[in-house]
Length: 314
Length: 260
Image (tube, rainbow over all chains, first blue to last red; front, side):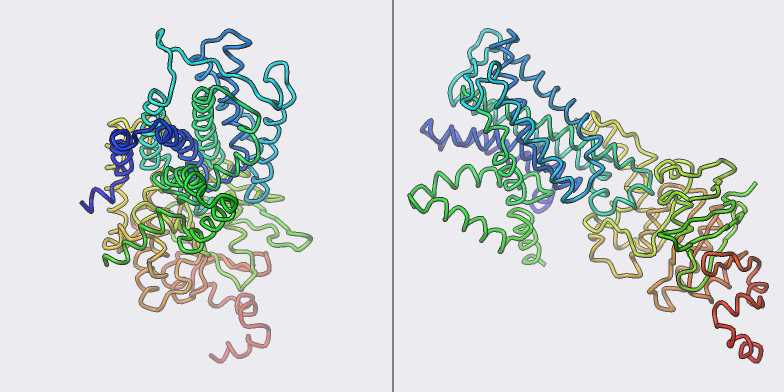
């Protein structure tokens, strides 16, 4: 059992079981909807964690890529006559290409400077969706046509529960694979000592860029899912607050922990629902919970709990 | 042909000359030491040779090839590796993973294969881990493989850096104060380790403050003072050099040294 828990693939097994078993417990479509949102945001945060938790590079503009994915499935079918599934793939590839082009110059920056540069990138994308009203409907957003796959209309919480759940499991599996590979070791090495990594032959620029592009693709796919699931997209999906939400999820759950990313996403999606019992004090309670978690679990939920459990068992 | 050489290296930082016209040639397979008082420019020279700083003047040759201004990861590919005076450990990784990163250049780096964990990646990970464990035993850290590097004692970290640098199979290994902060027993172990490495045909260049260690193991010693070369030769030659004595002890010390 301990070997299973220590295995990096534990998270994949746990997520698979969770996705398979939750519908037995969650009877109302409302709960299924919440679970679906957790999966979608979890997918984006798992990607962001590759960049932040493993390569150690911050991005405050990842909602930009999320927005690109979301608007791809909105604008593609409406204005360009591209089928939704193709628009989704194009959105993911497009986000990857944009990350590649923007990443080259800005990933030279470090720490706060990189944070501000990525922030600017996110704002730029959001601005574009706000201003190109002919294509995007401007600040009010636009309707997103339903997804058809092989003539089957993908609609409703059940269908999206399974699509998002499967995608999250696959996304987590890919991330775990990557972390255990030479690429993963190179990324973690960059995080701890860039200069030592370079001396050992790691092309630091290339690996940072790879992590940035991958995380952008994860975010774009998640963005497409959310837009197709909601049937509506607004520029807020690409906005600053969304970016901060992703970073908060990653940090709260635990940087460098794939499982943590999903837990972080779950917390920020589920807590506001639970805290509605406090009515007017809902936001105060959310803020308090976040502060308390960070004070008592300073490495984020999963890494801190793992460390505590390890100390107990010694 | 020398394994590593520099010709007229000069660099200054904000008007302060750190190195002026430093030339040296290191033969293949020898243990070569660079010494000098604090601020002599030893680490600066290492940083230039390993591609971290571009020199303002001069050339660096590695195995006869001009490598001046090449970035570190290109130099690593051409057989140069180094350790750091202020340790640069990947402290969130385990000891064995630290050494595995050193195998980076000998691994296939196909992102798609890594993402989908193809069987080739498993095989390669296993081979890399075996090689890394071998190197950990070579430097005497066999029992530490799975420990987080951050929890290793200081002397062990010095040796971990050496194992990691060796993992890239360098032709030339730069050791920046490998015995700094080590007690006499640990220094003795490092001494033995350096000789074992050189015996395998690796050219070892070291910057070191521990004179006993330097005098004992180096074939030749290059002495810097305030960024300039003041002497080069065998341990015996350097020990008796008046300028070297003056640099270390001050002018008044020369007279005292004469009695000692």
